[in-house]
Length: 441
Ligand SMILES: Cc1cc2nc3c(=O)[nH]c(=O)nc-3n(C[C@H](O)[C@H](O)[C@H](O)COP(=O)(O)OP(=O)(O)OC[C@H]3O[C@@H](n4cnc5c(N)ncnc54)[C@H](O)[C@@H]3O)c2cc1C
Ligand SMILES: NC(=O)c1ccc[n+]([C@@H]2O[C@H](COP(=O)([O-])OP(=O)(O)OC[C@H]3O[C@@H](n4cnc5c(N)ncnc54)[C@H](O)[C@@H]3O)[C@@H](O)[C@H]2O)c1
Image 1 (cartoon, helix red, strand yellow):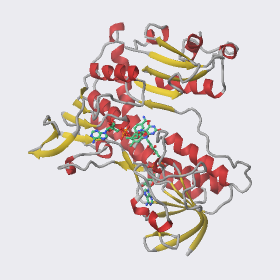
Image 2 (cartoon, protein in one colour):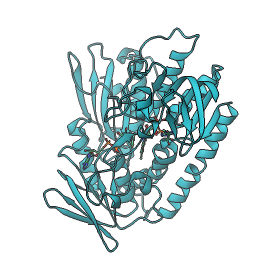
Image 3 (tube, protein in one colour):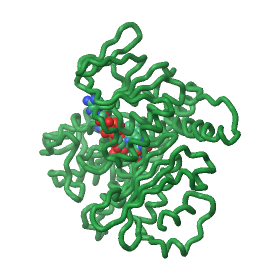
Image 4 (cartoon, protein in one colour):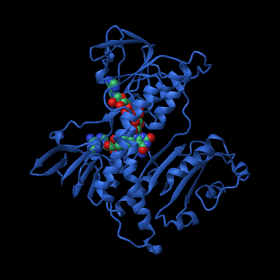
């Protein structure tokens, strides 16, 4: 039985980052992966979707400028876009594997299970370690309704050889809204069936409403209060019914109703770990109830968003925390977190987005500002929260460049920059950053 300092289960952004960090510290590390080296983000998640989204963004930005004299009949060639995405994603597993190997990390392919003795079993082989790190991520949640076998997932969407004419998305979270925009821009007739009345309850309602109106203008239809009851197939068509009897028909139905932690195969009962519906509970040191077993990334039961940079942040925290030389024995502290729903218009937020105490809230419509006027952004607005020292604490932004703006605000929040400090810098003009001046004023 081979013994390591660390066994890491799951080679996604979290597991890989932790394995690299510990190896660099001189530890012996075994990394176990059962599917694709690199995990969700580069194989089924962020990266392939954003390669496709690049065409959606470019098309919409060009179309926004038709009124300014730009002409052309733009359309997305699905097959070529897919080939472009595949050229990137298909190379990920072997490239990732080579990188890990050349760093000196031992790799084993297969599903990891804990045994009653606390070892890890992969196939017939048993491995033991001083400490274990679970970074097994999450997968699309399956709906328990009649005919659920007819529902496709985001993974299936990314492999569609051809885009069908009529596509239904069930659920209205990040995955659904991003993929719906790709399908819509590529020419499909798209409907999103939303569970509740308010879409994106974690965003400021005024902003999520404006965002959905924007998507409706682009051609996506939204059907609210849809509680799915059953799915049926007749010929090549799929039908979905709500509990209240409403029925919709499409060529494919993509279910994007959230993600569930990958925990079942781990046999965590053998090592005394109980999981919740949201994943593995840990303390402030990312340690499970079993003191030798830690967990990080999307597999965690946590309140903060499950995102790639969050998994990486947790991995680097844990590597520092477990380093024998480190003085870092403090609980993990998350900085202000940016989240973005990508698309032709982007809805983004960072940090504190509501007034809690003595802060001030500033709502600004930026549509007529030069930066946004120049690119004919159809709707650009921001709600910004500042404290009494006029330091930015957080913001919600809707615009075609909201992803960049929240990251610039990220620096301002981290460095507690106020107007006085900001005025000591000169920003290139005209840019998103040069507008910051007006956000402070
Ligand atoms: C469609 C989509 C788009 C997304 N877009 C974005 C985005 O734009 N920005 C962003 O920040 N985030 C995005 N995300 C989220 C992001 O992909 C995840 O937050 C990130 O991949 C989590 O990393 P992780 O290492 O925790 O887990 P994962 O990347 O899920 O990796 C876990 C790995 O563990 C492996 N595994 C599971 N069980 C076992 C086992 N028993 N034994 C061995 N291996 C196992 C899995 O096969 C997987 O490779 C998106 C997700 C999806 C689905
Ligand atoms: N741009 C990004 O950063 C990005 C993109 C995609 C995914 N992600 C990550 O992946 C996670 C998962 O995304 P997701 O969209 O699968 O989940 P989500 O939690 O964002 O959204 C799930 C949606 O499904 C709906 N829903 C739940 N049960 C339902 C039911 N029975 N019937 C109909 N609708 C139902 C919810 O109301 C919600 O609208 C995100 O929370 C995020 O962390 C991030």
